[in-house]
Image (tube, rainbow, N blue to C red; front, side, top):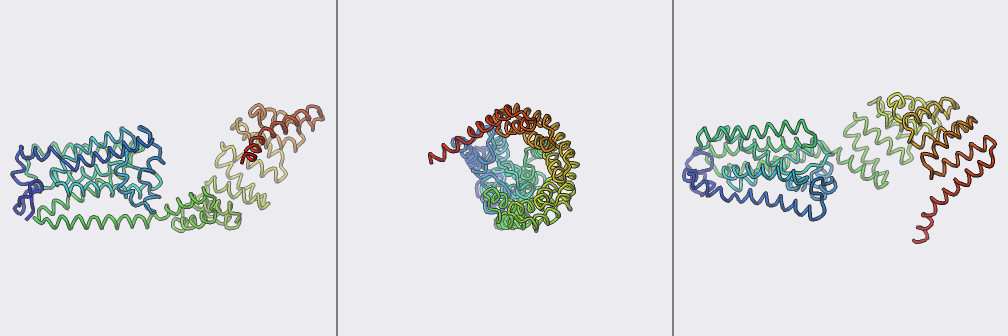
Length: 470
């Protein structure tokens, strides 16, 4: 026979869910409800973690992603790799004071009801299981976005209550059940819709918690109807095993994100060979994703492996002919191999795809200059300059092109504009010296050259001083 979760008395088979008639009396129910130790403990843990975060310098209102990850926030690339503990740790980490205030208010209201209906042990299992289930859903849905908070677990508690109040055998009059059910339904719909409309809300965790909570609610109803306390324990054990199986399945299916994250970290540490190995695993898992082929191609290029780089980049541009990054990388390799015609074709594609992208026009100018089309190169550089007059490289390339074409007045004007933009740039003054020299103005050229040398020495002086100190 099942036992009352409040007082332990035996219940007759088919009794209303978990609560005996004596404990359903208003005075008794109020006495039990006065404590809610599990709900209080959960809130206390959440608040304690938040206070410890603040004490260690985490922002009260806008913590950074790195701060949150340091305290256990969920991130698919980490959680699915080795940090499985984040599935539960993230449930107790919150993103600012407003976030924790709203969640704790919701937990206090839903938690009391759930703890009273299901009992302490089942309610604690419900909270932890659905919190972890929400984290698994979050890691699978957006593995590159950090997430944290108790909302997945809260949605799990609400999901269980919805099923229990809708389908469970509660010894409560209809006029009591109906408003509670309506309130729970309104809470769920509002938050799911709000999360879908407003950015920055982890609806994956919400829905993962909600659905897993509904499943637990259904299983609890069934266990109660069968009148077997062991059935409930067995169901909870099976749920735990099922969650582990789901996590391992997600980890296997989404393994490419682990390799991609490892590749990015290897690149940041200049471990190029390791980055290539990891990216090869990524394209093996996602062979039809152009961006990953392009990343692999760039990694090969950085590691001075032009042929495999070309193969990967060609595959990337075949999959996505609009890949600006892919065509740009192809152009760079072709130029390095002196395949000017192929480079020019690649850069023309980039300039067509991104006509307002300054580097695209500069690269096109470089390729045109390599073909001997100086006028075409000058026009490309001028377009780049017109797009962004604060971009220093446009002055450098345009000035050099004018010098090559012996258009010294244009070169002088270009370099002078550059010097106005960056008065301390020695290259701008060196260009001015070259333009004056071309015009036959030796005195002005010498003065500009001396200014360039003075600025260059000024730039290198701190480096020399640092080297001496070491």
